[in-house]
Amino acid sequence: MRTLVIGDLHSGLKALKQVLERAKVSPSDHLIFLGDYVDGWSDAVNTVNFLMELRLTHKCSFIRGNHDELCNDWLKSGDHNPVWLQHGGTATQNSYRSVGDEIREAHIQFYDNLDNYILDSENRLFIHAGFTNLRGVDHEYFTKTFYWDRTLWELALSLDPSLTKEDEIYPQRLTHYKEIFIGHTPVTRIGRTTPKNAANIWNVDTGAAFRGPLTIMDVGSKQYWQSDPVYLFYPTEMGRN
Image (cartoon, rainbow, N blue to C red):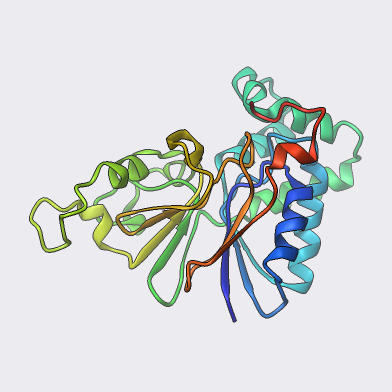
C-alpha cells in the first residue's frame, strides 16, 4: 500500500481526476489530502461531492485547510466576509448558489469532520500549514495555527542546511517528526511548480489555485505525479490569479 499525499485542490476537480489517473491510484492506496478543497476554481461543490464519494471506495484522510474553515463558517452563518471573497470565496459562493439544503448540510458535516493533522505510525506529520509550539502539535495552544501558520515553512526555508539536529541552535520544532508534509504556502512563491523539500519538511502545494499543477506524491519514495496546469482546465476563469 502506498501513502499518497495530495496538495491543495482549490476546487480544481478536473485536474484532480487527471492526476489520480496519472498516479494510477487504486483502493489499496492511502490518500491523504492536505486541505483547501475549495476557493479558486468553479468546481467547489462538485469537488467536495467527489471527495465524499471517493472515500466510499478508497482509504482517504482529509485534513482541514483555512479555506475549508472559511467556507464552512459562511455555510453556517451566511456572514459577509469580503477578505474571503477576494481570495477565492466568490467562486465558491457561486458554486453553492444552485444547491439545496441537503447538499449544504452534507458539506457542513464534511468540513466539521476534517482532521487538523495526522501523525502516522512512522512519525510522519501531515498538516495543512504548520504549528508554533516548540514541543510539537500536541502542545499547540490555538488550533487555528494548524491551518493558518506560515512560520514553520519560512523557518525551514531559511535554515542553514549545514546544521544537524545535534546542533544546539537547530530549531526544536523540527526535531519531533521524521518528516512533515504541508500545503498552504504555494511553492510558486519561490518560483517552483514541483514539491519542495526544506529540512525535514515537504511542501506539496504546487500552486493549483494559480497557474501551477496539482500534485500527488508518494511519501515513501518521493515519486510524484502532476496534472496539467490547473488554469488550463478552466480557460474562462481567473482562479486566484
